[in-house]
Every structure is written in C-alpha cells, then in structure tokens.
Image (cartoon, rainbow, N blue to C red; front, side, top):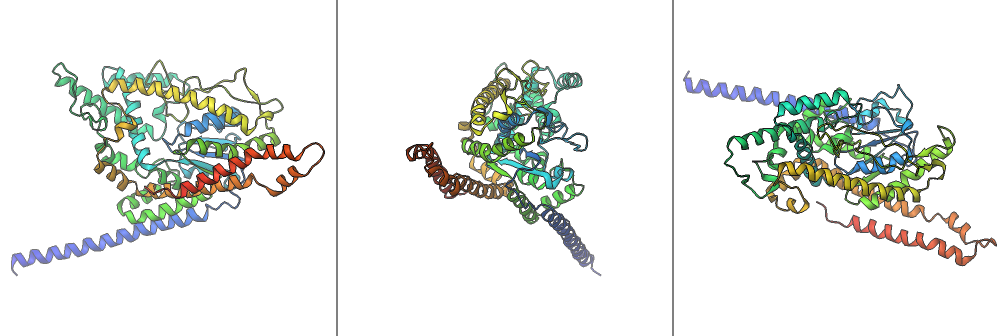
Length: 492
C-alpha cells in the first residue's frame, strides 16, 4: 500500500478515536455537573426565607463593600461572644466547637454543609462584575505594593513570616482569595522593580500614561485577566462562590465540576441555575452600586429582625451592650491593610467597647443607621489613607475611576466575555433587589396598623396621625419610584 495512503488512513483512525474520547469526556463532564446541580437544588430549598433563623451567615463576595456591613451593621448588632470562631481566619469553621449566631467569611456556599441548614439564614451582596474585576486587580496590586518597603522579595517573606508567627491576629495572606492573589502580585512587583533597577538610566520614566498598562511598574490589567490564576479565582467568582465551587470549597467534587465547566462553557448554565436558586432562598441580597439604599434596606430587613431576636432571647444576660466603637486599625474582610506601622503584617484586631455603648435592649433601626453613618465615614477615610500610601510605592500608577476610562474597549469586552456567568447572575440579583424594595415599601402600609392609627382614641388626634404617617408616605413613594427606575435600566 502506498505509504501516503497508509498515513492518511492512520490519521483518520486517530481522528475518530480522538473524537470518540472527546465525546466520552464531554458526556462524563455533563453527568458530573448535572449530578452536582441536581443534588444542590434538592438541598437548597428554604420554605421561610423571609424569617431570620438562629444563625446568620454573611457570604461575603470579595470587593463588594461587605466590610461596611460587617463592621457598621453586624458588629453593632451581635456581641463578640456570638460571633462564630475563625470568621475570616483560615476559612475552616467547625460549628461543633462553640455555639454562635453570626458567621462572616469569604467562604463559599459549600460551608453550609457544615451548618444546621434548617436554622441558618444567608445574606450576600453582589457588584457589577466589570467593576469587581477592576477592584480585585487594584486591591491585589495595592496590598502587594506594601511589601516594597523591603529591599528584596526574600527580605519581605522573612519579615512577614516572623510577624505572622508573633501575631495573634489574622493576616491578609491567610484569607481567601488574597492568600493566592497577593503573593502572586507581590512576586511580580518585585520582579519588575528589579528589572527597572537593572536597566536604570537615572530616570523614573515609564512607557505608558495608562496606570492599567504600566508594564514597567506593575502587571498590566490585560495580562492579569488572562492569567490562569485569574481564570481560577477571579472570573465568574461571584457565581462560583454562591454555587459553592471555588478552589476553597468544602465539596470533594468541586474541583472536577469547576474543571468541566471551564473546559465546556455551556455547562456553566447548570452552575448559574444553582447560584440563582441560592439567591432566591437568601434572606437578603444587596447591591454595591446602590449602597445607601441597600444599607437602609439591610437595616430594615435584617437589622430589625436581629434586634427583635436579641431582645427576645437576651442570650448573655441583662445589660448587654452593642459595640459602637470604630475599628482601631483593621477590617476583618481584609479590604484594608491591618497595620499602620508594619505594612506587611496585616493583622486583624477586634474593636473594644467604649463609653458610647448602646444598651442592646434600646437599639432601634434608626439608631443602627445613625451608627452606620459614623462608622462608614471612618472606614472610608482609613481606606483612602492606606490606599494612597500604597500607591505611592508604585508611582506614577494611580488607580482611579477616571483612569478606568482610559482602558481600551477591547480589554473591557474581554472582561465581559470572561465573566458571562457573573453578568447574568448580577442582572438576576437586580431583579431580586427590586422585589425586596417593593416588599419593604408594602410592609410600611399594613392596613391593620394604619387603621389603628386613624381611629380617634382620645390620645391620638387625626391631625397627629396624618403628621405621623407623612414620612412613611414619602418613603413609600421614594422606594416605589426607585424600584421602577431600576427595573428599566439598560442591562450591561
């Protein structure tokens, strides 16, 4: 037989065999993902999602502004003794060790497999996926830049190890996903700094005015989003976290499911279906972009129930107080550097009570919002100071909203393409958010309550009742108009 013909036949046979293996691999992956999705949907039902259960789990998606909810709401409502151990610390929580009422971590949804499902309520916040990718990149660079005070990478690692061994707090480098993203970016920053020194001509000029593309200073955004680490952790991160499929998952099948979805993109629809169902079953879903309105609704939907629950149970005795003091130097969600003296230390600290503590039994939604306003102002100032100090070390790179406008459209389109699941989940969350607003507005107009107000009883006159209800009427109009406006916004 002609050697050329033999070669052609061999190639055809190899192609058929390869195609058969490919089909079998897809079928295997499809079965794995379908089985996981079916099991997840079966165990994910919540028959009474509107009622706060015994344990509140705040599933904190990184870079969504969750630090303000934790420090400015939840730590004002729950005493430290009621916080679950190891929150934000190494992300391996054992609920059997200690009774607790509040769990706040970057853990994904799979941690609920270790929690009492029928006694656990879940809340979360989502953010525009494009902005979240930008923020994740910026924070990775920002925290890594704090290590540039050291002469070299080896020195930075040694000092960090010594500080972490002596500290009783939590380091940013122990917290998912920063324990992967920050070391990666830290090594890159040192490599680029060493390269600049090696070719230094006595000037500090860089090859670009775009802070997201200053390859002489930091990894360009385009390189970042295309790196395997970003594919593993950043892209569609919110969807995988809510589905319980991150590389920090408690589920043994998570790696295989994630691998199959990455290999066959159409299987991501099953993950998205599970994530949407999880959002449907949550007590509250907030949005970063509508932070003020979202915070107000959180106080009314979640805060009010916590206040009522604590008042009824009074788990630690009369005279318990709600902490109003501001964090002295750090935030548990790791979104700020946790040490003003040693940049690389990054330890967590717990705020202590002060003379302005509010008695738990006197806490109201109004007082909660007052403390929130003071707290968030303080956190934002602290964040701004540390951000400025960090970015000085990689000058002239300076990440701002205005600078984001310089990013080429082709890069933005690639971010969108890489985060299709998150984009769809975010739009779904916006729909849930609008429904929550509508329900909150309707709850203000309980007919029985208003009927009692307008009945003349000798102590309440009709005019007084009108004055009393006017703020509620205005608030109803505000919530109704905003809910309508949000549903009409153009999708991303």
